Image 1 (cartoon, rainbow, N blue to C red):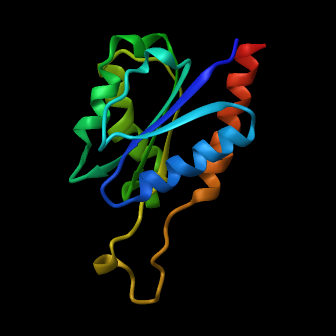
Image 2 (cartoon, rainbow, N blue to C red):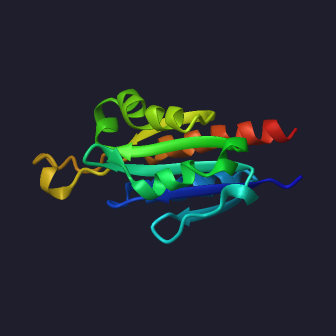
Length: 158
């Protein structure tokens, strides 16, 4: 069986898109058939996919509505699920971001996720520290996470 993986994301500031691209590239490099989708353009039907990786940003204390539309699909309950977010909260405390933004939605929609993770978002230029520390993203962490996903998916296939 040739399984298909969906990597779908919604972003405003661009961090979730950068993470999604790294995740999709890593999964592809590990032999998975991957389709990447920007939820700003459409909300894909998850029926055709075996594995779904969903990512979103956080703005004003909430995840984006279009991202939640994917979570509401009935077919998603039968998928191998992975969720990520990028947020300012994750810069200081990634586990707090997961518990505050991801866990409540996974529980609300009664989904069984193989992994929930939070990556640091981009610091807006106007808030960046004067000492030049502007880049807070950790793309290497996304790559490591994607390698774990690839292993889990391949183990599930075996």
